Every structure is written in structure tokens, then in C-alpha cells.
Length: 585
Image (cartoon, rainbow, N blue to C red; front, side, top):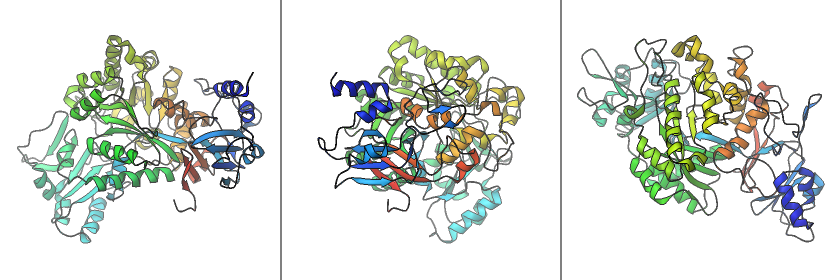
């Protein structure tokens, strides 16, 4: 058998000893561009664990000593991994121009991918007033007043991050904000974007009055006299968003790049951008054309913009020549959020009798548009939070894939899958639908989630283990900027179901916890598969794109709380070092 055929078999089998043997000798091939050595490499090239979390027999794991890494070094040439194995084997491929990095026992993983992001919003938020963690209206207004004192009169002041879930029983209004900040239009978006709070000047510029029609699926809060209070919810949020001046193309590119570099510094080599509007899509295409994207962007077009989606249906799925931009998914919204009581439930909210949320056509879900996109080869990622929203979303996907069997192979997703009826758990597997979940949401929502749905329905909420055992494919993400995008926080949340203080002891509904391997796979192997990138990424193997993350803690072996003290040492995207701790990037 020839060496090339032997190597092809090795790549297919992902057998490390054979992969090492496939490395060409240093005197017959060009030198590597990059060599990483003296590391603890977890290739994740072995099969998935069982649905109860038990490692595969092929995994580098034994019950006596636990996990151990399966390589120590990697060599990269022209953006591809050309060797995985020992230090000596990798160093043999180095030459005069090779960059050789001693990882000093750092932990090497396949490049991390955040599978549900809003990086354009992150870029905007880096320029806005951060109200994340602010506990009261008074505290928030004080912060905004401080910004106003340093801002020329008449300029917009934009903020984000106040928690619409935690504040749901004491929503703010315009009175104090308008009194303290009368000379600037102020719009303050909530943590997850399902509420927005404005002062009198911003309401006037947005044209929101007592006579403004309420959008379907939205709410304009009003006082006893019928005047807007300054708070809008769900599908009324765009009334304020649309009044804010849009960034220029150059400004948008700058925001997007700044956010992507933040993601590089956090260890990410890919993002799935959920709900891309036209100006952000234009920015991604401009940056891809200039080969300026520092990580892979899997763009999910916003189904709230029918013209954009129709344009892409005519154009068809697309991947840029360098592979760094992929456009083959559409993001739609079936219902609202649980915190603001917009999620659609099968029965009344436990804390608001007679109310079941907002959903479907009244929430802007265009079934015909999304179905047409699916028929044209686009993956559907549908936001569904409540148990009724999840059921209706599964029904919709089922109806389309029955009519168009080829659409079944598109790996459709339910974004959040937050509260699922036990009767619907197995349907994810039966329909081949991915449950795209956010581990941080469980620990951030645990203070009020059970109040919303009651003690019985909470059993199907944030139920990752139950979904896995039912056979549902999972993928993990942050939903940034609404939640902290640190991979250490995400891994810790998935493994412990505890907040950063360690509460509650043992974890919130601990039977739903993930193992360390499952948590890591949720940000690597499974994310790559969800973005149709498994041939290129998700594992460390010869022939794959050189997307690599190096950490200073070992998620397979450390006590979980130690993850919160972890740091990123190196991020490599397509063979390029895009972040190095202590470096200039």
C-alpha cells in the first residue's frame, strides 16, 4: 500500500499513531509555518460519549487515572494541520522560517466556536454604557447621568444590559431618567434585547405617543392616563431601535472587527452569528473580500428582513473563497423571552394567570419565508423558548421536511430550546433537530425561572441531559452580549449548573449537568457539525483547518471552580496566531 493511501486511511480513521507516521520527512517537503510543542493536546478525534456522558472506549480515558491528553505537539503549513503527535515529530518539520512556540504544558483544544452570538451587538455595546449587573433603576440612572455630564447636549446616549428577567416585577419608566437626563435622547436595551427603556426625548424622536399603534407581539407600556411610560417589550423594541442613528459602513466594519478580536482573545476561532441584518451582512462580505475576518463567521440571516432573505434565496447558500464566511442559515423567532413573559407556554404563566406569552405570526414569524429558505437549502435556526413555542417550532419543521424530504438533511436548529414539554423531547432526535442551548442562561435565570413556569414544568427547562438522553444533538453557546462569552464561564456553567459563587450546592437541578467532555464538545466538535464545518474543524487532525485554542487550565482534569480562574494563552485561526497572551495582537 502506498504512503498516500495509508495516510488517507489514517485521516479517515483519525488514528493518532498513523497520523504521526503520515508526517512527511523534513528533507522532502517544505517546512511547517508553525509548530506548537510541549503541550497537552486533546484532539477530540475519538467518538462521542454515550448519552449519559460515559466516554467512548476509544477516548484517552480510564477509570483509574481519568483523562489524559493524546498528543503533545502540532505542526501547521498553509493554514492546515500537517502533523499531530510528539514533540520530536513536530520539531522535525521546523525550518529557518518556522515559528516554534513552546506551550509550556498548555492545554490544546480544537478551536472553540460560540454557536449563537450577536457580535455586531457586542461591537456596539463596547461603545455603549454597560448596565450589566446593575440592580436598581436608581443605580442605572446615576450611571447614565454621569455619562451625560461628559457628553455634548443633544447626542444620543445608548446603554444595554439591565436584566429584563430580574426586573420584570419592577420595570423602570421614563420619569427619573428624563428628570436626571433631559437634554440627551437615551435608549437603554435590556440584557437579552426583549425590552428597551427610554427617556422623554428619545420617545419624541422615535415618534412614540399615546396614539402609536402597538406592533403585533409587542407592548408599549402606558401609565394611568394612557401616556407611554418609556418602556417597550418584545416586538415593540424596534420602535426605539429604529430611531437610533445607524453606523456608517466604516463604523460598522470597525465595530464588527473589534468584537471579533475580543472573541479571538477569548479563545474563539468561530462564531455562529444569529439574526444578521443587511448592514451587518454587508460588513461580513466586505471583510471576507479583504481577507480581514480573524475567525470563521457562520452567518444566520435575519428572517425579520424578508427582502434580505429573498435576496439570498435567489442567490443560494454561499461560502467565501477562503472559507471564513459561510451563509447557509436563516434565524427566525417563534416566541419571546421567558424573563419578560413573552415565551409562549402551553398553560398560563405560574406568576401571571391568564397570560401565555406571544408567538407565531403575531410575533413576526413568517412561515412561508422560512419554509422557502429551507426549500432553497438553508438551515433554519428558530428561536423558541416556551414549551408551546418549542412544540409549534418542531411541528413547523416537521411539516416542511415532510413536504420537502431533502430539507431534512439541513440540520435545522431550535435556538434556546429552553422549556420543552417531556412529550416533545424525543422529537428533536426523530426530526434530526439540534437543540442549540446556552449553559449560562440556566445559572443566570435560576432565580426566577421556576416562578414563571412552576414546579412541574421546570423539569423540562434547561434540560440538557434529558435532551441528550432522548437523542437530541446539542450545541453550546453564550448568546452574547446578553451573557458573558468567556468559554470558562460557559464550560463551568455546563458542568456545574452553579453560579460563580458556587450556588446552589451541587448545582441547580444537578441531574441535567454535563460532563467535562460533553461541555468541551459543545463548543468544538458539536459546534463544527452544527455549522456544517466538521470536515474542516472541530477536532485536531491532519488535513483539517488549523483552528486551535490553548488554555492554561485543563477542563478535563481540574476541579470545575478552577475554570473560572482560567485564561487563554494562544488562539490560532486558519494557521494564523490571532491572539497571544502578552503579545501585541
